Image 1 (cartoon, helix red, strand yellow):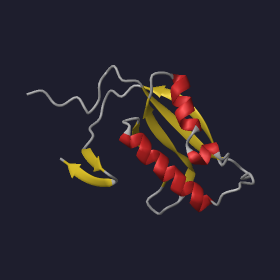
Image 2 (spheres, helix red, strand yellow):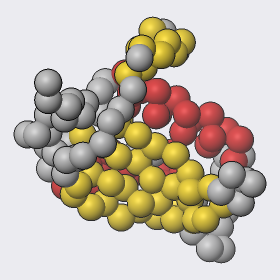
Image 3 (cartoon, one colour):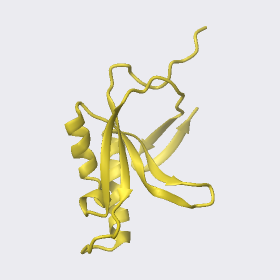
Image 4 (cartoon, helix red, strand yellow):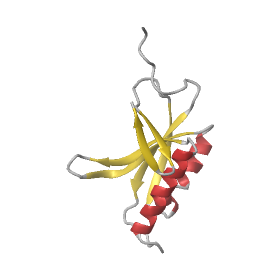
Length: 124
């Protein structure tokens, strides 16, 4: 029996959005906590729509940060991926910058998670 080829379609185009902190941080009208809440709501929306493959900070196991983070999104073009990333709340409020690169998912294994109204259920 052949090994599974991963949880992806070879015709799907992905984009990696590298996020970096803006130094020095700009003056903003909202608190970072407010932006963080918008950020999580935005990621949940992208997940629900099937746009977001993965996202997270660059962080060591001891909690040390290395820059900001990254998002991997499904999009029909680089321009669309750039627009999706530009709407991410930290980016939208000028706290982060981003760079988007096309990425082809060819190897790896993913465990499925089913999201039902904000709850997560692991499958496999």
